[in-house]
Image (cartoon, rainbow, N blue to C red; front, top):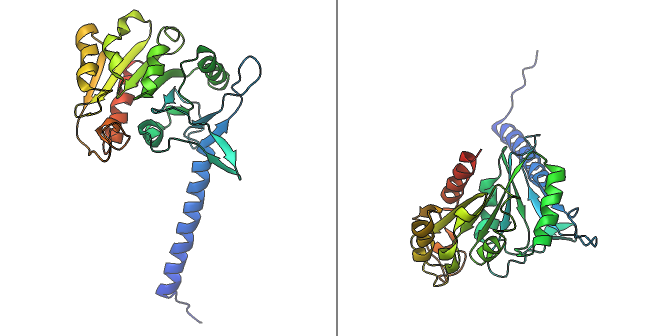
Length: 252
């Protein structure tokens, strides 16, 4: 009888093959969890494209959907080019951190920041068809909070809540108690951007009792008002998102 033995080289090769297959499965799962959605439409039929990120492995509808408004110009313009999904503002705090938001309970929608009731309503109507039981939140960062504040009255009874991160200084005049939904202000204590001071963010809490989370830590790189500075919660993305998710969950 001949006894066959496997050489260390064979075992290593087998492990590499298994690892390669596992990575392929993981990559396919990631692709399945991210899709370009074009079924949201204006009344005239024009699409309002957005990126939907969800936990594809969960197999169930999310409890919460968070619509993300990035800062700057806020123009994400997601589209397919040469078979690939491409979009702007990948380095923005919310866009790069959405992977920390997504789990079995949470999905995210990444779309152009907007102060247009018609545009946001098109997205909300589409989400209602897709996830009729989900509670929807809208979260903006930096210049994207101009949109969350502009839409606060319109969305008062249409979404579960609004989240304003690294807010523009006009946040100091936001009285969230005027609205029927929940509002949260999140700011880094060391944000040095003159358009988004911690002083003004904290003032919204002190003047009106708005719910408020102050973050600290991380590191600051580049211009004070850019996404890799304290302004963009650089280095504490997960901690910031986790605090926001805890606040959302408390609302049921």
